[in-house]
Image 1: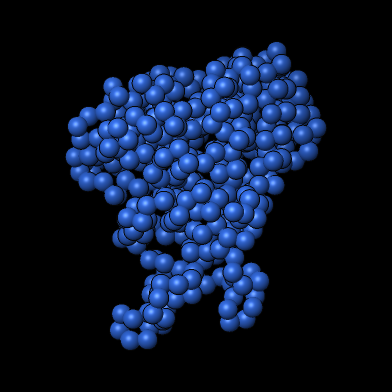
Image 2 (image 1 turned 90 degrees about the vertical axis):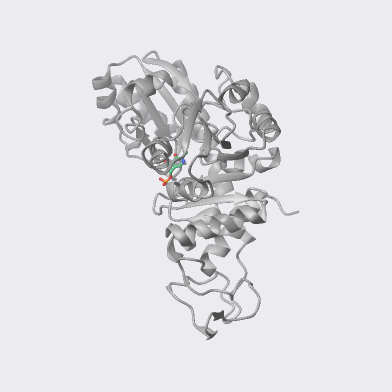
Amino acid sequence: MAHFNTKAIHAGQIPDKETGAVIPPIYQTSTFAQEAPNEPFGSAQGRHNGFDYTRADNPNYRNLEEAIAALEQGKFATVFSSGVGASLGVLSSLKAGDHIVAGQDLYGGTYRLFTQWGEKFGLSFTFFDATDPKNLEKSVRPESRLVWLETPTNPLLRLTDIQAMTTIAKSKKLLVVVDNTFATPFCQRPLDSGVDLVLHSTTKYIGGHSDVIGGAVITREKDLKEKLDFARKALGVNPSPFDCWLMQRGVKTLGLRMERHLVNALTVANFLEKHPKVKKVHYPGLESHPQHSLARRQMTGFGGVVSAEFQFSIEKTKKLISSFGLFRLAESLGGVESLVSHPATMTHASIPAAERARAGLSDSLVRFSVGIEDSEDLLADLEEALSHF
Ligand SMILES: Cc1ncc(COP(=O)(O)O)c(C=O)c1O
């Protein structure tokens, strides 16, 4: 079987049959001609036929899905308009009355989707500390259907033991979804541990260049793939063909980019850990991370995001993160350029302050998405900004 970079470059990249174009074209069309009413071109559902309307399917979706599924060791993938759109796709396979057990420090937008949308439509949620698999048992109810995990978490970089959690979930007949956005398939492949669904905000490392918004869900089960495709069509959470084409271009360098992200992130984490103005650094690749041994067992790399708590008030913390030169103050992560953000007032502002405090998300926490620039320049930027505080 081909290795990671070979799959990233070749999966879903069959030259165009009509012209021989090595790079498959952008099928920028909303609709497809039919041979007879409700009979799309071609009899089989192959790569180049079986399409009727782009909200339902498009060749650029299928090409990207093939590549992402191959990297995650899955059989199928469904691409969506965004990571949140992908999460909505997963939730829509449930029904009113169903209960979801979810790790407690999720991405703020996922938490918002659950509590401000899901609850309105009859779903209920219990948030639990997913750093210990035993906590799952205590949160399961007779109406539980799904376990939702994010590992490493955003922004505290806490880990969940995927294998142990999946074993418990399966004994209770629950589906398991892992948001693998932070780790990427380069560092972690949850389907190999028996997880049913892997979710990505492809906006992040998979796209890799901060120029598209997208999402994807990967599985090995055909019936789950059919439900996801139905959700995309029925809810209208489809991406654009051009965005999929751009993301496929990003996927080809995912392995190369990740190699550099990992080296730079560890360099930044080590620098911050030694800095006198830093209280605590969160990075699974550091020996000081409380779950470092789990990280070594479960991951093949520790990711490109580093979070640090400073010895500063919230006001001083906000001033610091506005004063970097290379680390640009912006939402998001996973692009080639380094970004910095303040979770308490940005990505996680939709989580109530009390809930944030309970989850250990302090007001002086700063999240660094470490890019692939030269690490000497990144360290110089940090050093210079911190010297003024
Ligand atoms: C871990 C994680 N999951 C999901 C999302 C949502 O993705 P999107 O912004 O593409 O909708 C994000 C966005 O930051 C994220 O960090």
